[in-house]
Image (cartoon, rainbow, N blue to C red; front, side, top):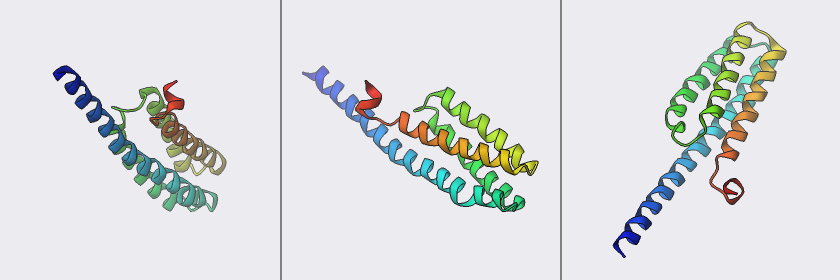
Length: 127
């Protein structure tokens, strides 16, 4: 009986930790997507490169802070794919390339959506 209770306590601890992280991750990922949608892409389309660069730098810094925790819960390959897309988008913005920057930002937005949806604790992802 003692082993069962210890196992149950460990399971509850894992589920609790995952649930807290899932809520945190949900807020962060949606914040990244909203920032890309509402701020950065519109600045790129309007050729407001200085503001787009500043906002993208903030998003990049927030992503790297988020990634320090996310690496314990998410697949590293998926995080690296997002890093590669961030690097490409950064240099397209730096080069003031409207179409490629918009394309990479849209790709990043979709990668973040898939990252969050595919790593969510659900029956569809378990089986």
